[in-house]
Length: 72
Image 1: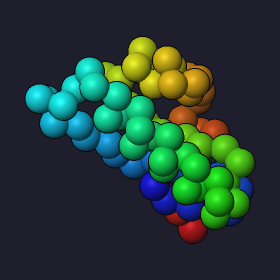
Image 2: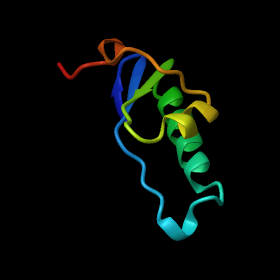
Image 3: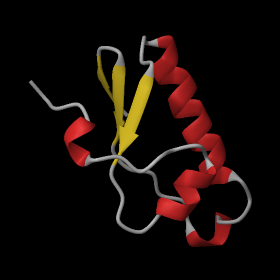
Image 4: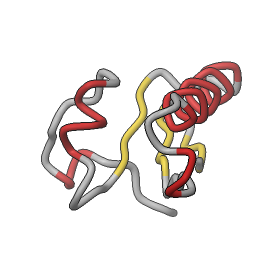
């Protein structure tokens, strides 16, 4: 998770194949979002090509990549 003022960028999450389906990914995402909120983030972005349905189930929405924060 990278912080950009009031925005955060989730770079990557990987869950071992034998732990999938046990809620591990959700716990990791929840913790990262809570941590970034404590740091001042009000909005979080991530890029994915193969986890859209899963992440939409966690509350993320599909958005144009141009809206994501950029490194200065």
